[in-house]
Image: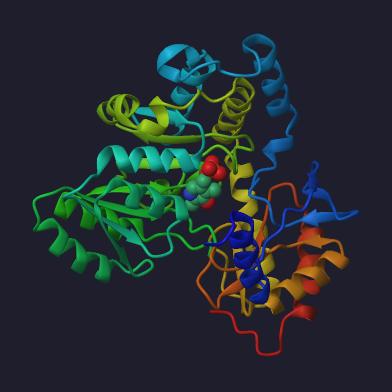
Amino acid sequence: MKSLDQFCLDRLGELDAQALRRRLVVTNRGAEGRAARQGRAVVSFSCNDYLGLSHDPAVLEAGRSAITSHGAGAGASRLITGNHGLLPELEAALASFKGAEAALVFGSGYLANIGIITALAGSGDVILLDELSHSCMFSGARLSGARVEKFRHNDTADLGDKLKTAAAGAGQVMILTEGVFSMDGDLAPLPGICALAEAHGAWLLVDDAHALGVVGGGRGSAHAFSQPCRVPLQMGTLSKSAGSYGGYVCASRAVIEYLSNRARAFVYSTGLPPASAGAALAAVQRMAADPALCARPSELARLFTQRLGLPLAQSPIVPLIIGDAGQTLAISAALLEQGFLVTAIRPPTVPAGTSRLRVTFSASHDEADVLALADAIEALLPADFAAP
Ligand SMILES: *Cc1c(COP(=O)(O)O)cnc(C)c1O
């Protein structure tokens, strides 16, 4: 037997050898997409704060005033005494913005997925999920005890085949995907997926962590197509474009009532702190009132892809797939030297051999920032770089 420390040190050594070891770096973020990192003032293209709302004066004031009136913490789980007044207000604002009957706020997006999936699926059921789905959907799916099967990324033909087999069984079938894929920036083909789900009676959950506030006029992926798609479980986070913290799901009243009784990550976890809820509420109100703000990050992403001759961005996320982890780190380090923060994304966050620079744009960047970054990246890309 190894000692606990030796076990950890051995594993870390393996990660080091593959350029896959990760380290915490202090990054102090400021307004306007600026940050301080490793003693350097940088423009960050690695935040999910797509609308710059984490530093918006009205959002900050809402957070402060929530602390003043409700305290620093919720004090208990929601079903006991942790349901302070800002939470139902936030849920009403989310449901109204997204055009759903009701909403439920969780402690985080990660907890929301774990809670929703395990409450709705169990042994005897089948969960079909896009192979590039976020880690927390895989965690929820495995934890549920259902049979878990991946379908090829955004491939409705493959999903259709797997759905036929799954729907012939006795249990329920759930389909899980992301509205805007977090590491690739592409959109799920929701019109096709919704039609398949309806045809087979499967329950569709779409994770809009990177879609809320940025596609479909800010209302998310179900609204990003010429016809609104009927997505019965629209899940998302308040930690990205909403600039705060917390997770949510928008659904029918029946589903929300059930989840508030049976989603363990909701029932047995403390309510979201007032400051986070108050700030998120102000952010959602701002999104609903300002579609031009919601359109801005994707406009800047398109400016960037046009400048580099890449396929036109579909969202504020643009991946530049380098492949090798070490080479990706070296480009990221060279960009940091020039004042641009673009972190390297490596396995296991992305599949082996697809290490990448993940560039994210925010409404708080200006066009000069974007063009300067494009020119710096162009000079650093390997000669054999080819866009997908
Ligand atoms: C960030 C993210 C989550 C987790 O949300 P948190 O609120 O940060 O826990 C879930 N799904 C996707 C696709 C994400 O990108």
